[in-house]
Image (cartoon, rainbow, N blue to C red; front, side, top):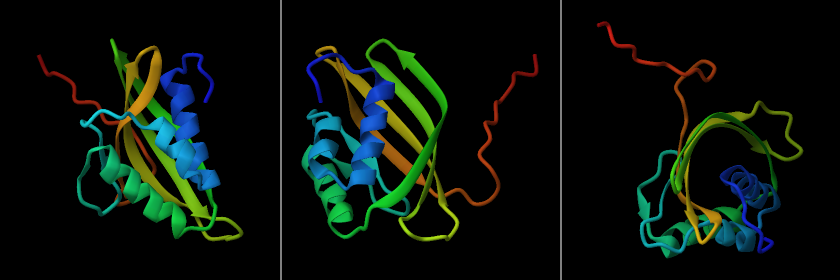
Length: 140
């Protein structure tokens, strides 16, 4: 990464690039070094702290072939030094003609010294149907 400030959108692009390239070095650069970082992989346990999160990604990356990953940002909310991205991921093994696995993720970023770093990645497999945003509306 360059020394110039990166927006949360650029940091997110680097996160998904690190997955496509199976690049644990780039993945490590994306994540904050704060102790308050968290990750929940689909069906997995809560991982807390940079070292636990980094190890989980290193284990995944070391056992994987480069995947085909597409993602669509469904919503972004920036409030001060935090940005929350709701993302739909489409993932499949490279060379495979199988349908993509669809994953919904919430990625949280914090601006630290003019750069955005990931604080949290929570991914889950939806039950059925395409991604849609449901809004609760007040009746009165």
